[in-house]
Image (cartoon, rainbow, N blue to C red; front, side):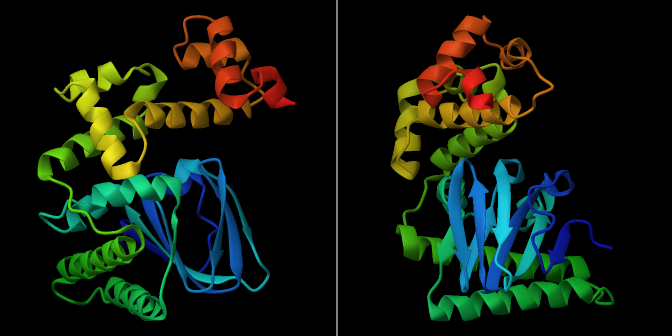
Length: 267
């Protein structure tokens, strides 16, 4: 059994601990499915594809009675091995998919996506092939390049210089790894990346439309909401977990960014 690639015909795994280390790739064959992701609602419709970069940001999934899909979950380490060499476009794609994981495909792109999904499944099941792993990796790489093409058609193609790609990739890795729990100043991330804060924000703005501070705040607020939903934790405990200097400062931060106090959010 290949644990790096999981193929399902439903979204039962999406949003669960079982695939926290996986990137989800979904194609909708029939019906619709409403996804609450990163505090926003998205509608997946027939012919759409969806890529969920961070499974932890999935809050709810509501499929229609006739919803039918194919989902390919690829582990992060295996995905990194399969990623096309010398192609930095994934950085721009990653940043936009955090904001909107659904891509509307043309008829031609739909056929291409369905073909790619079938080929990945075929290669995954063909374990008697002497070069099974290598062929599977090649097929997944083709899938990635087609996804890049879909994304470039929707958002516009813009090559990301290697240095910028490395910096943004490391920045997002730190955020996904939870660095925002203890560090919410752009200067900290810039220091770790050996650049000045202004340059980090310029890179973020150029390829995502948001500043570095906005990304740090987005991750922080999402985590605050997640923790506040856990009624077993007190406000003081949550403030401590997120390294706020005091509960009162935490209260002010929440009120400023959510428009209400932590207690009101819990009601």
